[in-house]
Length: 209
Image 1 (cartoon, rainbow, N blue to C red):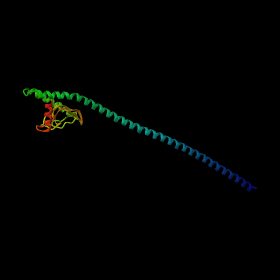
Image 2: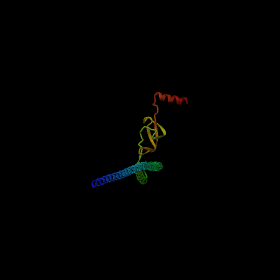
Image 3: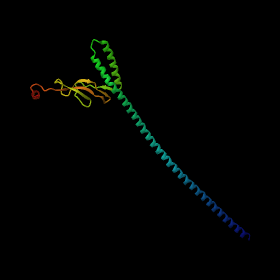
């Protein structure tokens, strides 16, 4: 009888243990599921934050590129404005320089004091122009070019080839490689030599008139 009671009690205990184990397993499973859900949410949140960070980074890169372009454009415009102002000032000054040079040529040798003083002034002015990047054209004896010279008149002569510059009326200048003032020049126009066909034609034309 006692054995039966013990057996019954043992079975009940076994059932209780199994139930406890199942409850514990069920509890662990719920906790695991909760943890998995939490991890999923955390992973999703991290993904969203990464997307935001990537978006902010892209915007930052774009903003930096825009700023760099703006800075370069501003520097270029400032340089252009400075160059334009410099060029305008030099253009206004060059005719004055030409007048000073003409005045120097007009002075007679009997006025050495005036000549010496003027030469010093001209020397300083030329130095100032060079420091600004201005160069005077070397035109005398060169072939006329409409791109850098302006023909004021033609001089009939056979001492130079046709279209050769024989006189400088007004100096020409470069600012860097740019022509800032074309040279005013006289250009050689060859005359037909006596006895030539051209000379005969010219003589006939003259007689016909």
